[in-house]
Amino acid sequence: MKNLIFSLPLLVFLMACGSDDKVENPSLKINMLHTVDGAKLKMDAMLYANDLGEQFSVTKVNYYLSELELVKANGELVKIDSMWYISLNPQNMDATINLQSLPLGDYQQINFIFGLTDKWNDQSLVPVDQLQAMIWPENMGGGLHFMKLEGRFSLPEAEALNGYNTHMGNLKKGEMDLDHFFKVEVPAAGLSVGQGLTEVNLEMDLLKWYTHGNTHYSLTEFQAIMNKPEKQAILMENGQNIWSFSIKGE
Image (cartoon, rainbow, N blue to C red; front, side, top):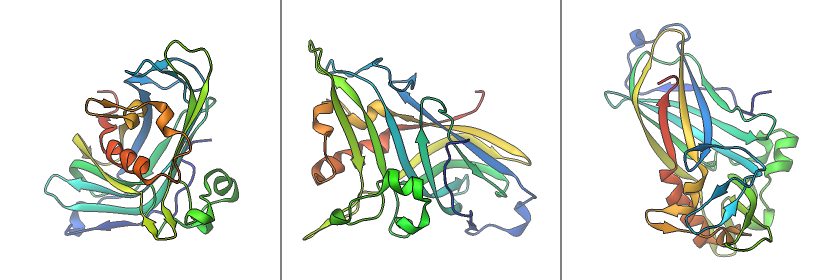
């Protein structure tokens, strides 16, 4: 079973596009790849290290994307108003987003929301098993987690293993009314949609969630952060720079 787990029926909206540039079922398959410092992710294995000397593993990767946009070479937008749930496990690391009946032509960029806007952050939109995995506490605003990135780590020269649990979601309690979804814009050089299937890769480097320029954050800082807006803000900033695009086979 593919790990593009859930998508509402796709609605493709065209802005300033003529009707003659659309043919029957030109489609785009986006392979969602996951790496750590450029190396293909292998889950549940203490294979990775950050620049602070912390050894770590990745045991859970669950997240949502929504409201995807394809930017044509002339700046026109193709909007796909939907949501996608990505959930990896060691037995199946495949995750894809499949888009159908797209306008033909050259594209320069892929945009999307990491997480869920208010329109999609609705527990009634997801199946029960997904809700159980991603429910966000009512006392923090309810809705859904935007991401669960979890694993184990050890500090330099230490044998004991600790857990990190990087969870993202809105924080709405008391006087706080904070949205923690954010827009991502990924250059997509060489993307051209023709008749039939076009296949591309969108890669997330998990280590970069904890890196910003020359600043490297310890995994000790990302334990129990759901109620910490300053940590959520760091992730929103870092999450702009964790993506790369490629054409499959190139």
